[in-house]
Image (cartoon, rainbow, N blue to C red; front, side, top):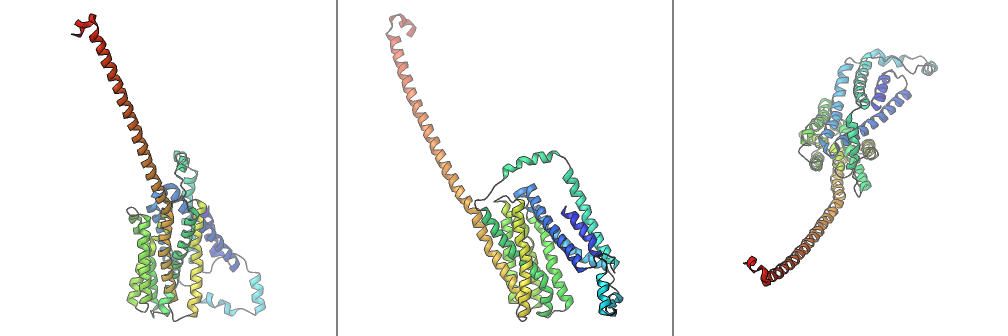
Length: 405
């Protein structure tokens, strides 16, 4: 349903003639995106559970690949720039009263001035609609798998500190997504104003960040098959912390910016899907839980870049963007060990109880077998006395002397 809503919004966006209507369309599409993001993660967990790390990486690789290719395809689709007449048309308006009356009577919908814009949105929305048809076909398909999937609820597990884990992961995603979006949003402006790069060089720096980000998310699909999610998070935290520190220390060097930016993009790639796969190992993630932790990432994406933009505008000489990325990397590196301790503490306690129970059972079994051995020994002694007495009676009987001989 979220894909269908997205399709409708994308079809109507090029026809919007007023800002209010465009805001409404973008807001509705934002809601459908959030539902799609949450539902996609929960769907992966519901199908594969804690064994779905490669599939989770593949899902988020598709996000990164689409974000990397869509602007390029849109640029190719737009092709020709809007004519100069369209840009200068508002300058030749008649008096203000006539302009306001025309604005009031302007239609809400209409054809865009550039038809290439219409085709760019139409092609994207058609593709999304085709994908939604496949999902509808799977949804309405009646198969035996649905019946087999019902008993899977027996695998439900809930950590002792379930809510604490969710809150910590909320904060983890808040700083991670905030740092990722902040650098991706401001790297072009930072490179041109602070590092003194040309615009084409700054554009290349931006491209290499998102390019390495998408490429390493693709490689993470294969790494997730042989590495645990926790290991991938630790490696990602180390890489992001080292590269962001490198960016802060050598923020004036173009060569260092190129190297550190590529390492930073590669380090940030696998963190988000690995975090979702990691927590599923310790507690079952429902739709509400997934929505809660993804809200943390959405808030970080909204709040941190906005704050950094305001502060950077006031302190133009300082690399506030890089400081914020270093701070976000530091917070994520500190939060994850705390999450791991909270998640494994009940497991350690459970292991100790299991060992204690096993020892108790072994002791009870040993006592049981000792009792059985003692009873067998007593029974053997009694049987031996009976045999001896019976043999003595037979030997003393005169009628059976020959038989005894």
